[in-house]
Amino acid sequence: MAILVVGSVAYDTVETTRERRERQLGGSASFFAVAARGRGPVRCVGVVGDDFRESDLGLIRSSGARTDGIVRRPGASFHWSGRYHADMIERDTLATELGVFADFQPEIPRDWLDSEYLFLANIHPTLQAQVLDLVTGPRLVALDTMNLWIETTRPQLLEVLARVDVLLVNDGEARMLTGERSLARAAAAIAAMGPGRVIIKKGEHGALFFGRDSVLAVPAIILDDVVDPTGAGDSFAGGFMGSLAEAGATRGDGDAVFRRAMIDGTVTASFCPEGFSVEGLMGVTDESYARRKAVLEGMMIP
Image 1: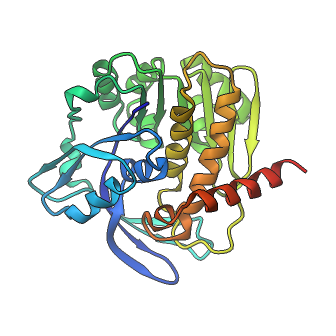
Image 2: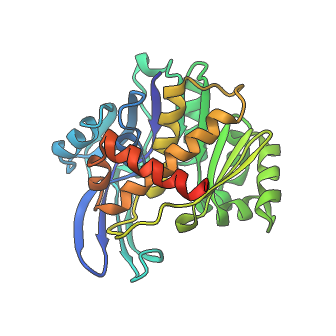
């Protein structure tokens, strides 16, 4: 069951109280692909500049993902720079340089158009709609968005939301999208827009799943040391979608398979902050994953 992810492949410059890393692998599609751990396999669609290192594409491929859909264009790759506060939660964006990503038009290989699962990462809603027009009958479509698109492209976003099965947003974005203070009411309002399932991410406090007939609150795993939280949300999405693909889930299934995917997404995301870039994810083994999953289940079930 192949997963098609369309999003950014970028460089991040990250500064924490302990260290600064220049131009390390980042981007939503990159974190998603590595986090899914080959459970798709994952097919990546994005754009990079002529400054993008082939070794970084190799990092993505080393997780079992395909990078045929990542095209190279003349110019600079998308580059984000940020500084984390001492609590490793708050951060300041120092620079956002779109480079070739400013003119990104997804180019999906023809033999990828029948991908069973589609994850539309945080890109312009018009581009998300274009991808939906091209992909032929996916079993399940999930979408991520952000406050920028909610504020500036609301009509286009609402159109694409009516066509997807799962929406992933953080709590602030859910409230902004719906005008509801209560997250339960916000989730219900979003479901009325189209997505049958809504995931509301709450950062260090975990995530909430609002399904067709159930609600699940999953806590974040408590880590001994947080090195770099960048990409944790996209890593959650990779683990979540990888779990659904592994199970052969469809939009018509009951909530149980999605609830299990919430666990897998949370476990996966917990490895991301333990290293810079994708280092924490690259070190995951079947044994370490099983131990971490047992820890999470122990937090939820006495």
